[in-house]
Picture 1 (cartoon, one colour):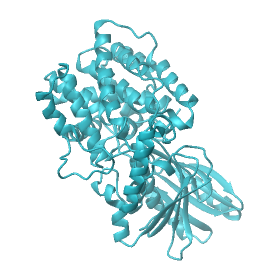
Picture 2: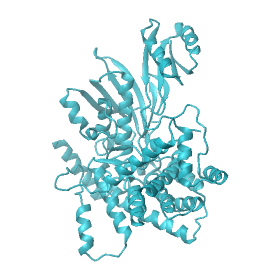
Picture 3: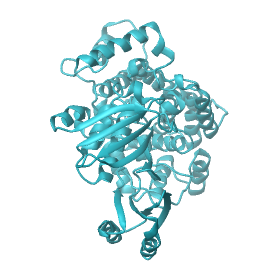
Picture 4: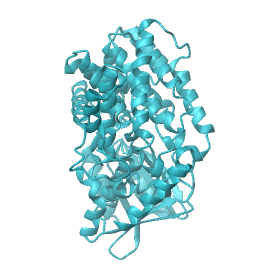
Length: 523
């Protein structure tokens, strides 16, 4: 099975809000497409599947600037991504969006056609944004491929008549080769090469019998091994590994990441530190006086912080602090500021509020809070390996439900609990959110997303407390994850981030959508 990296898939991407699937995932698709094209892009058409989620959400959730920013060469953590549409226009780029019937194999399906200097389509890629900032390119100029940004590959296309000679040459280079055919052409996907061999393969472009060569570099924070040694892929396996090695939860998180990626423990710790720093910064509320409002909600976190001091409310201690932090992060995401999708932008307030704010309330040092982040990421990897973070795939239970489960396990780490307790808390938190639909009003991550982040933090904290007090949720974490995914697959598409159900089709929800359309037309 395919296993997923904590820092590629779970605690990241670091990105401009508001959506990991529709902003960051699209930016990564655009960037990989630009790198495949091999030079500056001046003209491109992004075509959405008409039955997917993009047509109703691509402006509200930032797919327009995500795709455009990537095509311009911006990485997800580049603050210019949010202004990419305007930047492209100022540079004279012709990048436009349309919709038509595609394969409908994924809710987030888009075909990107890139034109050359002769106004011909030189690059055509069929793409899926699979959730949490992850993506797949599944067709390259009509050939079936698999590109997800975790491993570098070179694609060589030649005529069928010249294929035998080409493969004979490739076989002498000690590389992995996959072959696909289309009409009278053959495509070889080559991987597993070193730097010297890469240059030799790229030079094939100069041979007369080769039609074209495209290079797809690894663009993720952690480049994955071609043949990783998978220590475990789920909670049951992690528990067995921990018992066999005597290692703690955060230590086995490091072991897991090193076993599947071309990286070291020191490099993983540095990634964790950087993630912590960005998360902590994102808990500072945006200034309403100087921050543009892209949606329909004004920024309220600063005002609410003052209201706590002067308004009658239930004394809730640290939960009040976590609520304000979660709101602040989500407001930064809605303002298209830099946040960490953990595991998604629509749930980006949960982990910072749960792990950093609660960790600080316990007077824990930075190092111990980072260990809590690693445990949260480890639990998230089980979800990514065996289910999905995509609301288009399994609704909000896959976003806030997953984030709450990750947070609950991380909080147990902060409290000094053991691995069994962490997995029990994660299972309980996810159980409490099974069946939660995704219905972002106006296609924005504002209502009900912001309040769901807050409730997800409370759910995580109380789940951790209950387990520490001795409660057993009975159903193992792996089985709960499977149930979440199964429930999501049984939900109608109208309840999975298409803006066609739930709060989106209430009288008020429809009015807000119309108001937003009018607002955008005036821009």
